[in-house]
Length: 66
Image 1 (cartoon, rainbow, N blue to C red):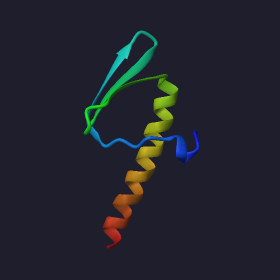
Image 2 (image 1 turned 135 degrees about the vertical axis):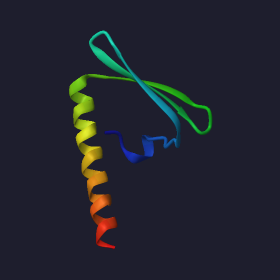
Image 3 (image 1 turned 120 degrees about the vertical axis):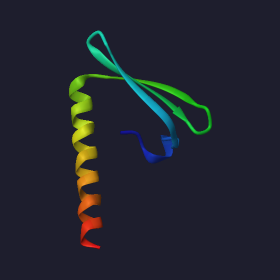
């Protein structure tokens, strides 16, 4: 991934996903009105979902331990 100085951070206002032919498109609108369309393969999104599940499971475990 790019160096942190090359990355702009946006807060998501809403996001939608759709399967288009052989890929998946994710449309994102940020709080400031910026709109992005991300195009990804199913394999790329499977990896992302795995990362998100790991993060959320860790958060759940921390919440239960508290």
